[in-house]
Image (cartoon, rainbow, N blue to C red):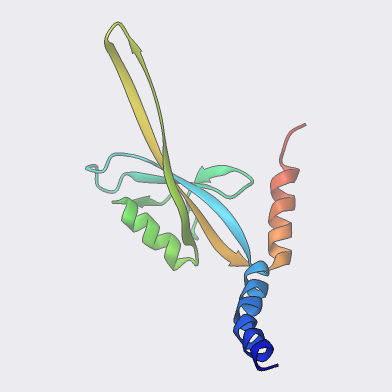
Length: 131
């Protein structure tokens, strides 16, 4: 009986943890960039909210520019977003020994939300799909 009680008490934290993790919902957004690192105040940020990809704007509707990617990341963190994943895509071509390539970086950010907010975001994202 003592063994059962000890095993039961040891398992309670795992059961409670699993229940809280399953109940979390997140809104996701993809952030991409355009601009050169050495060109001050000309680093443009694009924001994909699941409905459209648009240039990031402030509360007054003005297009936002950042000096560095770190500045953009600090802005998003201050707005309640957290980094989920970062990555990059590359493309290029070559012909007779010469060629070019380009790489673009992106972040996938997420923000905790309620189940209702999550369902509304999914509905809004799927209603914009063309048939």
